[in-house]
Length: 229
Image (cartoon, rainbow, N blue to C red):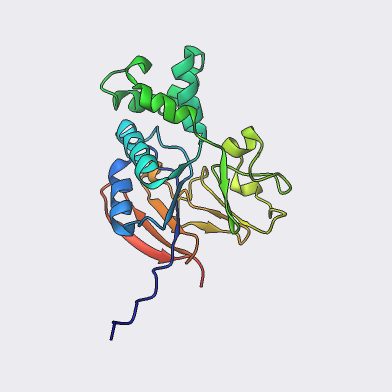
């Protein structure tokens, strides 16, 4: 008699908030979550400016795209970074938001040290991703906008303070506005998972199927919590 088959492990939608150059926290989350091939990984943008390892963060994400099909969305900091790589005209704004530490992570203070693979990665970042349950976006989306075609400025710069319920009934998962409490902000229709790693807080990974989360700080310490249920 054959042994009874075990139930399949349910797939997860694992969504990661603003990383801001903290590769140690990112690695700690990935180790703790141990995503499998059936899990979906979604990153909400703002990969650079803040911690000392922006270049290493982009390396990790590029590998996760290739090996795991990870979805990497565009944040306002990433958008500014791409712009200064094409033209120095936006350098003042980029440097004001922490650009010096990002360029330093490339072993040189100049944009020309950024490899082609990173430039291609930044150039290919979409504004949003959605499935039947959630809309993932860095900033915000208009309540009646097509989730596949959001407004560029609002997607990058929109604040959860002004969040509205989306007409589709999906939950919007966003970043961009740091939650200094270190806990994701749950408004019901919108959840903000930027938990302030850039300001000495935490980097959060939310399981949007089970509504649990894992968070890690810059030292790689890990904590878990439950958002709903």
